[in-house]
Length: 337
Image 1: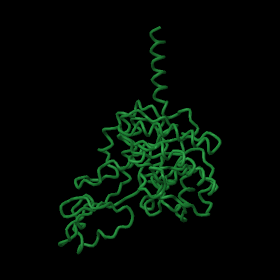
Image 2: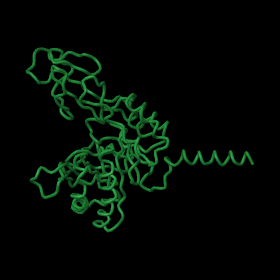
Image 3: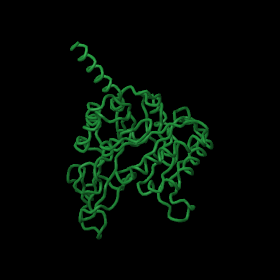
Image 4: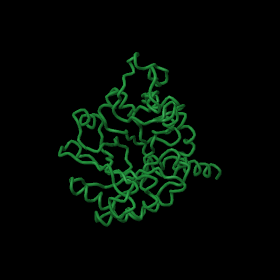
């Protein structure tokens, strides 16, 4: 009898450990995916081939952002901005396209004023561009203060989407590391964002994109996190700029205007930090911290998270030939493995 009891306990523990890897959810399948986070959806040859080489089946496309209205758009307290436009190319039309809507924490508190318009906008964009969807994802950095509003929004928007599409539309949500300590939202699954782990505005931060030390405190919540999760890993880089007082000036996400090899202009301080040589005007850029993530760091973070959660489908953030070309084919395949 004692052996039977021990066997049952072991079986239950095994099932508990497997609930993440094999949830009863057709959308949560072990496939390679990418985010697309630009306002013009057209792929160059490298990006189109990248999808083929890595058997990418799903592309999470940011459709638009939602922010507080400034009073000119409509009577709604919130408004859509940075809407994506689609080209006529077909290289991504055969993918499973998942619209992603980014909602600012300031906007989510007024969710009742824009939920229906948001659902209609997603529907209209899909119809206009001939995109058939099964799912919509929402991205919001909610906290304890805005959690109730966001969670209720997810319930309401599911019904609104069903009204416009005439069928059930699945809902997923991004999950930030700090949100793991709280109750999960009522969605079909989440995508754990393993990036933007540090405070980029802090001069003392080593790497705000991803530092494994910043991930470590949150992995304890993963073993009992009651929501299927995919894992999003970063492939991007950026430059953070500070003035002579080491105060934050701006985040340069795209075009780098400086050359780290120009020793006449820049002094290399180590750890990706550079100082502009000579005097600069007050509040002008004096220090530049260039941040990128090495393949070793990505794999170390991935290993740490999966050790505490189990094997997870991987989503790369994001599809950009400039960023992805920094990695070898073997390194990319290791991320997805």
